[in-house]
Image (cartoon, rainbow, N blue to C red; front, side, top):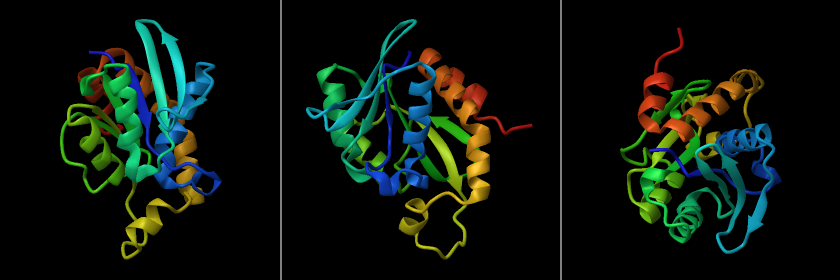
Length: 192
């Protein structure tokens, strides 16, 4: 099944714009830019939304404005209005357990300690695709988790993200067009 709704998880506001926790927004914005899509604030969903009339049907890109820990409220409201089941939804977000520069696609599982994913599970249920973008490992290891995810990328990490952004967008296009199984088969392999 193809994906009709792609939710990029992040936090609104300039203070959060270049933080690790906003990598989902960064990638979703790069996808929108590539396809010339414009964002519109939709107060009914507490989100910014871009409509993409792509081959195979209309797709929606959604950036919740509810802050990370309440992302599910915005995504759930949008999904209910458009009568979208979890299988038609993908969430794009940062993952501390994956090395910076790598990505993984999955469909089921726990929230892994990610409060944005916990909120999606609460408001959507399980079964949505997870497009997990690596921001780990946490350095230094003793650093507080909140400080790390809400911190800015290091210069070294920014170089990696810049080098990988096209790969992230292409992988997301694959997930949207062909669904999770082909995306997992192609994208979850370690880089040679």
